[in-house]
Length: 125
Image (cartoon, rainbow, N blue to C red):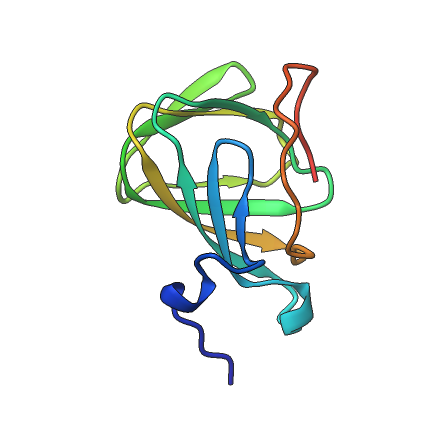
């Protein structure tokens, strides 16, 4: 049985500044589940060009509003919206307000990954 509380993750190695917010990593590779579960904060007003070459990702929005742009299509994101990047899609994640996403990655994250958001193409891990 694995039991974790957000309060015990904040300000630990599992509370990662991913580039435009925080990724609170409840499950990572060392937990042995085969997938990762994160509570991700996306900073208001941010735009991130992302691509996961080594992972598939699904995100469920529980707070805030924004959009995801993939393959030249813009998808609005608001509480209750789920999006899944099932083709390792390059995508822009834009936050109109601070967003909070519950994200699942498969295979699992090592736990220390961050993004390089320097405008030199998609950031990936």
